[in-house]
View (cartoon, rainbow, N blue to C red):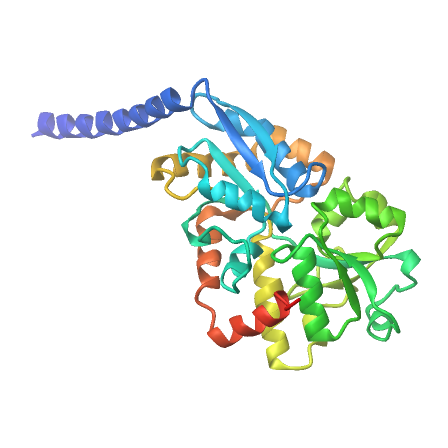
Length: 344
């Protein structure tokens, strides 16, 4: 009996060891001597690009076979060009895209140019949950939300296009709080907006996360701007006196619009996904590598130096939020469509 018990235990242990060996062996054979391609839907030098290039530098260490990585920027149409490209990319576990999941909400609003079904993407994760703000240049003469609400002229704010945080947040705040805004769209990324702010072409930008605002990339702009509004359910501990948008909403409908289009979207403002149909075992490898990269001491040191905020969202949670957009009441979707996709 003792021999049989020991024999059974040994068989179980050997089976577990075999499983541990077989999966990495397959993965090493597949990923070895290959490159993983990261597609960024926004311009080089912006925060999507900066996060992705930092992640890519360490990602291969956490994939069996240690593949190399490359980063490509495929910009245009507020991120649609890159996301449409990702949707059609070969689902072989060698392509990962970085984009704003607000476009997933826009899919259900009928955004023109959408050539994807967002829930079909394989979600890998997001590096942080972001606290969306509105920042205005000191040259605008507006230094508080109260001043802005009573301004006699609209302020020029930069946007990328429908489905991007800067454009969507500006439209939601104009509709729910009555803020006077002139939205100037067509910028390909944060780097282009920074140049426009420096030149005086723009007077501000909404939808930029506080975690990004205080990063090394935006530090210069922060010195010449004032953060006047935060689109989160509660105050941020680093900027506790900045007012919350939802506290100025005058109706239940306005509060609901802010919760869905600003609070919920802020959790998935910068997601990483693989093309639909990517084999589940490779998705698992990519998800694990993403989480391990975010915990990598060398990556964290690089992120700290660049002041990149890290508050990871799992691939499973990203997928749940994206699927949830399709379950919103039709009446709310119709109202969001009227606001976020205005008729020209």
